[in-house]
Length: 338
Image (cartoon, rainbow, N blue to C red):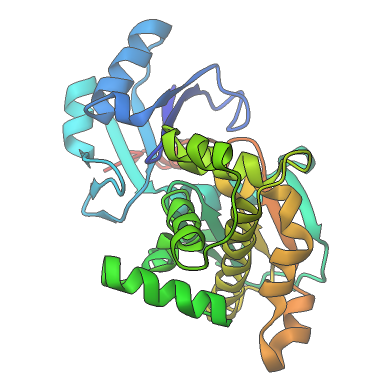
């Protein structure tokens, strides 16, 4: 029995999986608000106590780079450590992997109902695959073909320097550089970035907004959610929210295209993350236009398939990785996680 988890800056999803049921069918699962807890161990302990299920190993996808079995969670004041978790939960083994690596692990096992295709394209067999996930932060990963199967590779590309592609984005960069010093893509096309882009259109571009909407957004506990909801509300339009979200989607498309070019992801681009899912109605055509706007490589980019992953790919990917390692260890007699 495997405890798997997708540990993000906003939400933590946990599930118990078995080899018989596989990575798409948790025996039980739960989702909580990460910031309500002081540690991953506290969430896992509460979850296992409520379910009463016995697990002997765990695999967690965590939002941050994993170095020597240890990670500092991005956008949370947590440090997670494989040995400490194993001891605290009395488990035989624990494995941590980057959350985007976990999402990438889910791609080879995706079912038709797990994806929405934005552009079918013409994928190149066994070519690299790119993964971009705007959620609380901006995650990036990719997969490479290793003889007989795809292998997930982690990245922290979301923290690379933001490069504007038009005059408005240039002014946005200048505005944020004075406030943040370093401006990464995560700062302008993720959950933490959307309010910053909205404030730019309020303070610099002076984009109009109805006073009641402006007050509602200013008072919201989760400004990102309200800005997205308002931008998508055709019956109650907001010029400022619309401008902010359209800019975010354009930047997201540009960076997705950058990632595909850097890893030569001709096998396709897979989008994931709560922000991407919520913005699905705006991804075609604005996202695709920015994605393909790559000069001499525009025609190549037009042939790259683009898919949106729905459901819980981070949890499914962590489970797929953990179950695969467990099965391989059972076949070889070696420890699953060492």
